[in-house]
Image (cartoon, rainbow, N blue to C red; front, side):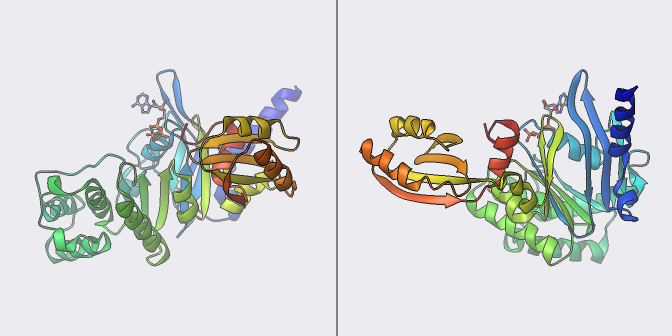
Length: 336
Ligand SMILES: Nc1ncnc2c1ncn2[C@@H]1O[C@H](COP(=O)(O)OP(=O)(O)OP(=O)(O)O)[C@@H](O)[C@H]1O
């Protein structure tokens, strides 16, 4: 009896929508979203919302269920259970309600590589129902946004990976969507293009007021771009909030980065045994320690280094990152 009472409460909790909480509809909202591929649960009970003008991040390692979740949100994949609403209207019942308001940037490049950028834009623009002067002017706008006006007449196959991704984004912006959903748009591209894309997303959100849903397994990207973040793992949202809210889960901890001139496994082992040290990880250029806040361990760390005849080249004490939050919640690194 008691367990069924609690189950009912849990069910009620899961279905309390943002509308009920705030007395208004979110731009986008998912309720208990679930997707199974045969017996495999790819996404389970995902509840998330996006308010107008927000930039929201979906952070999680490969296979966490991010792409499946956004495919359901964009009505490309039908959920096994749950709902997706756009301004309170079910996208699952009627996918057409959202399509003109949504720009989706898929993880894989979806362009005709034997055509030029302009030819691709014209083709996809017509699919959105644009034509004539409106189409030409929108093409000029989006080429400007992605910084490829000068190179618009080149074949896409001659573009770098980063430039192809920028045109992929331009296609998604052609019909001036209310919301843009991006699935790991910076994977596998050079740092310069990556930075260009991040700046562009920031401008679209902050200057043009576009609502953004951005998925990534790069913590730095969602930290930089997103007002709120949902952390996903094994198909579930395991934490959500602003960066400050999420890192406050670990407010009792801090990270000490020790840079060394080479690897010293013995020092890492000694620090691991030190009283007060919570976790030790060897990094590319040194050692990372998680300790309780204000642990006053610096003196002991230097003494240990001296005993092991280790040269510390730099030492930094840092407040927790989202990477630390993920490690704390799952016991794994985001990019294991
Ligand atoms: N069409 C499909 N058929 C069967 N299983 C699938 C299908 N699509 C995804 N999956 C499985 O669902 C789970 C979630 O995959 P998904 O691609 O959504 O994760 P992700 O977080 O986007 O990761 P990645 O960044 O690697 O794409 C994985 O176990 C994946 O193998």
